[in-house]
Image (cartoon, rainbow, N blue to C red):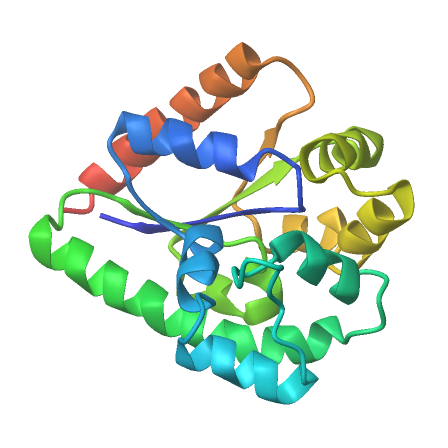
Length: 204
């Protein structure tokens, strides 16, 4: 069965689509979840970040302060490029580990790589299919502000730090619009899922 790359700009609805695919039977390897895992206090990734930026990134209780990190990397003067250069290798290694484990457990289940920076990282070249989730920029800005308590400027900066929808379309085999209702997105994903199962079942 295929490896399906799932990508989309921040707040486009990639997580929603990933959850739907998982409910349909896919094994979902989520880079957002992995990035939280590898950046925990005391991990090699965390230690590398602290050494690079000379900042503990913790709150008054000694816990990793992700809101503070967002503020520093999207408006506070810290380099997003340096952040990604440190974090991405740890995330990619873990994606590989989880994929190998999933395929060893059941090779008949499609594996979905849910990766926001699938294009930027070059991981899309290893995927049999690439699904790109899209939503209007204004809707994404509203979602970021509501979800993260970010300012409009921070939301715009987060969107601007990623490649454009146009670039994602160039690598995608299928586009999923998430500008409508959750029900609309559910139906679109179910249709694509059925098409992919039919396509790849014929190859085995």
